[in-house]
Length: 608
Image 1 (cartoon, rainbow, N blue to C red):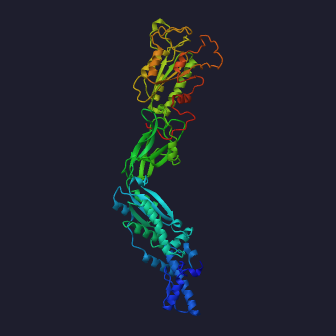
Image 2 (image 1 turned 180 degrees about the vertical axis):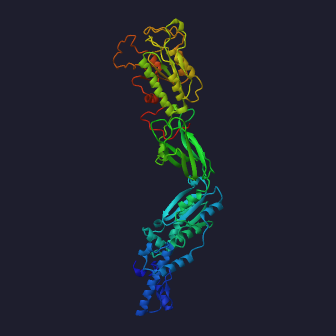
């Protein structure tokens, strides 16, 4: 299309029938004017050279005036649009354009906050925001659909999609939106914008209160968007615009109560089947406002990971994340999480006092939840049976191993673990002390207290000791009594750290390992049967490793002193290792306190 096919002032394409209209107008001695801007295109007169010069000067002045009015609608300074002005204005011309734009500016609209107040609580409001980049739709109004922030963006349509033909350059596009020469037919623009608005209304604004706000009042094309929505929605509310509707909504809803309750995501083992499940520990109920604080206690998941994800989520189904941070939680005892509410979706962690926002995303955290959780990570009853006698150096190593384990249990599980330490000395050789109790120890208690009990266990007297047996049956009898109460979902474990097997019960002598029966007539097999009936896992650490069978070869003959006692296969039914290769971390993994090295760390803290 050449310049003759456009209005010389506004550059809107001329109607192809305009030529015949000019002929008819000349015959009737009338002027032909542009339908868009009113500029005289033709008339019955025949201008001479002087008239042509005057007409050119008038057109140049009109063009600058036309452009300045658009620049005044677009902003407070014409310099950003200088490249698109058809001339350079004087200060007087610019101020006159500004006065004219101000005079045509529509009356002030009510603020969006007032529109929300008029609706009342619990009613959704769709906000149509006409902005520099295009049109955005939001839902707000203190309803669950608005999400944790109190508002949610529904759609965003850029200007080039609303009105094809607008330039990509932001300043040039704003100048044209404000009425600068664009070559876009206003009638076509109204129809195109009306179609796009109709699609948005059908999708988002049916049977819901709607408000339209424009950050560009007085600009022809943005005003066309407002008209399109008001034509389609007779009850639509008009609110004062803002350059950034999302920022305005954030300020408005910050002073309003939250519509959804917030809770902290934590892991627990579902009663009955042990399935891992994510639960929400209550923090802020619906209706809470900025300034409220809440706290909850959780436990750091066991394992080597230093950081724990603290995820505050909504109380709807499915939950939606409000804020997720990484924090260093204290080991063992339940740690305090204290949070301040600064408005819907705005949370500030007070404790722990150092958090970072580099936590994984909510879907990634959910994918890391295992199918089952080890019961020992939540509630553990552990009895450590320790042989106190034998060679002094070996006895010390047994104590050290158990002491290291208790320290680790205290760090990882804190008060959720209940540990008893039971130690046994050799039966006295002198007949006078034959019936003396050889077992000492304490009740089920926190690991730190159990460590003190271990430190207070007696040391063996110097002198000879029987190499083939020790009063392990006495300790097993005590362990069976300790682990015989209601389970309450707790993991129960017996850890035996010893070098010599138990004495047989009365009438159960071992012909291969000839030893006297227990002076107290205790039968270790009966104690083990009670433990197994109570669901106790049996783990053993023996002084010597178990002999290895070579496939296809017979086990070499051993004398009675070196033969592996069959009792260890029973007492180490769940797991057996030897003192030389055992350490606290490895035992903790066997007990289920620490995750296996190949297992990913648990994604959330644990319910205390």
